[in-house]
Length: 486
Ligand SMILES: Cc1cc2nc3c(=O)[nH]c(=O)nc-3n(C[C@H](O)[C@H](O)[C@H](O)COP(=O)(O)OP(=O)(O)OC[C@H]3O[C@@H](n4cnc5c(N)ncnc54)[C@H](O)[C@@H]3O)c2cc1C
Image (tube, rainbow, N blue to C red; front, side, top):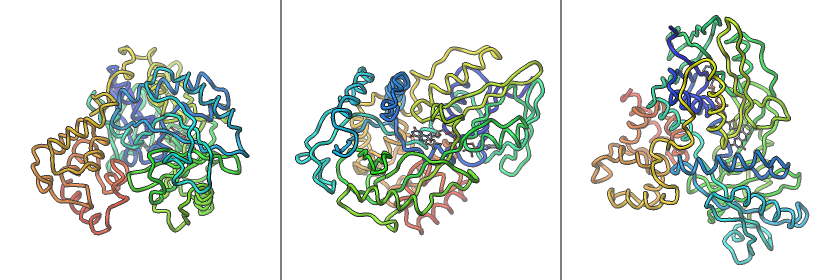
């Protein structure tokens, strides 16, 4: 008998979502990730959980409705990671006409009619906080509801749930070869050690590496794909309102600017073609300048490229131009040939559904229980999304030494599992050494024991974004602390 029913190559959102779904349906699953979870495109997404207005404009109504239904599911199963936000589109006379935007948003409301989120509205920005940060006197803006998610934590908590349901999650484990027969024989370099395992089927969920994994590792004809890159910049906070701004730039591209980790603003735009090594996706200087210029067209506060504190870039593949970021998949099998399922990119919003569809494709090969992920909360997500503030209050009442923002961050990252980190602490010192203004030894230990963190970047950029505020000396202390705790 093979060691596993399913071996998944890639620990991005697609890989972990498939691992969770399959493990919950009773399959014996192993997931192999060559670096850290979410080290690829899944920590550089625009973080939107949305129906996608651009799809609405292209009249892909079914796609929008499906994504909006998924948005509701995310609010129910991940109320800590997914937050409703009001998006604001300042009206601009030389771009899409007001009547057109208004009617698209009314339709958007209708397609999301059961979400419980506030409907779209027209706002007079001269008397509204939305207008305060804007450079020129916009008369009106259109507001609508959508959600944002902490993308890399979504990956990690999905993996935690997969593991709780029996999946084996191996980070630092690169799949280097797989021989195909009635089952697959895989070779991995797992933290420096060569390992061999067998599996009844393989999922190639390696994102931007999809073609090279097909060709070099699985030795099957590489699929025809287009690689795309997305870029975002992080600057100091440019506005106080809790909105996400969506601007129509002069070249027709949509630019968004969103509050990011309390003191920062994230600015990004649509993707462009990518060529090169997916392991080193970097943002071109011209693209940094482009986003700064776009922001300067709208915000009062000017930014230059030297103000950029971090760039976020990711690459992934799309099956063909027509499918867009829909997340296509192919299943290859035949007599005497163990199945190979390949999943291509796809957006964050529909990742749960995509995983469900992917695992369902494998039903002819295994007995498995029915689909289940639409109603099962992710770890720490066992509360209603509109009770997030109550959860924060409860944490502050019990651990009185925590400030409001600190409690908010902990509940946003861990939900009801924040209590496992805080334990019986009566004061901050009980949580161990401090690294930077917020990170404690107790949290780092938890991340190492429960969430596969091994190195400072795993903690500072993927399980949190505390790297933004961590002084270099504290980072070194963190590295020493983690090395000693290994
Ligand atoms: C251009 C672009 C724009 C996007 N825009 C949006 C958007 O607007 N909204 C939205 O919601 N989503 C968007 N996305 C989608 C989103 O960012 C990701 O595509 C999504 O998170 C799924 O990622 P993944 O799991 O396919 O890939 P990744 O997160 O890249 O994961 C693949 C993993 O495979 C691992 N791997 C590779 N080879 C091996 C090997 N041999 N052995 C072991 N591990 C290996 C890599 O290390 C990597 O971690 C966009 C994607 C792209 C490409």
